[in-house]
Length: 287
Image (tube, rainbow, N blue to C red; front, side, top):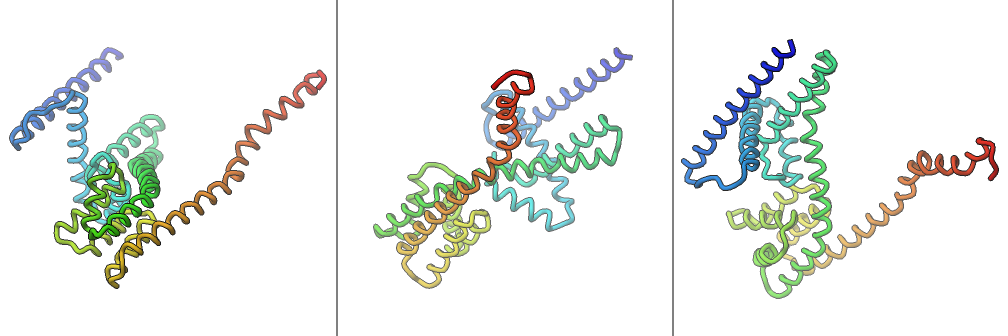
């Protein structure tokens, strides 16, 4: 019986390998036909590209058949808030959700032999890509919050030197180090060059990010553009206010530290201290 199972597993592995080789050959042929040249990279990079392509194809099938508009909108919002990490598309996101759901369903079904519990586990596993996007979005928001006052100061300097808002954005995007905020400003500049108005490009930036400081900056710049007020003086006030807000948030986090230290003190440090102090008494020794 064991030899029969080993043979079945070997046949499945061989068929999977042959199927992967066929998919890889078709992918390389398609890339060469699209005049992209020969693939330059390691076998691991090729495996990643082919795997992501297969997952994206699976997600495309599911994405086209999603009936609820709210689910689609929520997925797009999460992906945009995370900044499309690793060049992920919405189809690839839903493909990974399907892969995670299938993995959780099969593992729990084989382990517990209960379909309801396995179905619940598959649904929870399908939320893992969303958890990854949430972590990526939090890191991206923190990076944007740190870089925002400095970028506003550069905008003040450039606009005070006589440059227009569009030219100041171009200078900052070209000279600054890459980062989430610079990528957003580059996208704003791209939209304006493609024909969108400044207000529309700033509204799109505000919709893509969940940072309250960025939203306030976009709203203030839109209002300044509508009223025709000076952008330089507006940016100076914004930079000062954002620094004050960041200092207040830092003080709030510092005030929360004693409360957060209460749990490890009560459950980890105090029991060890009690054992050290009163352990010899219970053991019959002297302190």
